[in-house]
Image (spheres, rainbow, N blue to C red):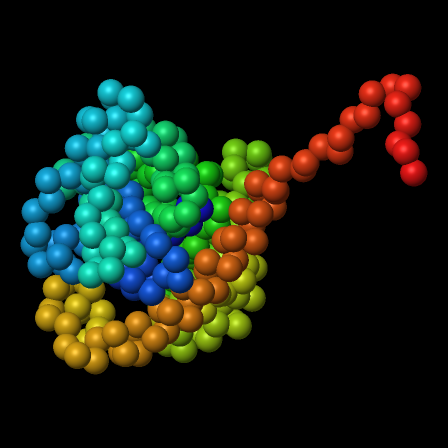
Length: 269
């Protein structure tokens, strides 16, 4: 199951939100950095770790058999239990023009035979070389926004564009929002009314915990019990449930055909 996360403009914290949700996800998950502007997780949370794999190398390998065949080799482990893995993003944004987003989205949606979910950090909606095929293939698209008037107004335009694209038949997606720092000044209900889509929850302002994810600040003993991670666990569960419901609509279980009895043979009662 693939879930795409995007923002309208600026820096509402999509990467930090996606990383917090991935670390809190109720199932095995892969965080895929598809932002055409480049990936930030290794530079921040990974404290400058240099990856031998990642999106650019995967794209080169995919020319010899497709991304699904090579995806596993380009994932990095993000936690001790190997429940969360990372597909590191581009180091040079120029490479975004060469990525086959369509095939990559298909590979992410079916990773591990569907037993692992994929969270795709798609960056800013409308950016050059935006991974639109990942949005079209996703079971759900999550718009991340802050709660200021400027951020909500931009998110409103983004939602309208996504709805128009869906209505045109270019893609079917379930739209929802996640708010970063709700109540500054608008609350979840007000933002949901303005956007016309459900708000699945809010991640609290927690600068100390956020700096662990965004800038590689060492995590203290209380990091996993921080307000940010507690909020992320609640939001992750709601997003996973929301996406799974829509995935079931898109891919209903196969109907088992009723047995066909040969003509002329009646059941013995």
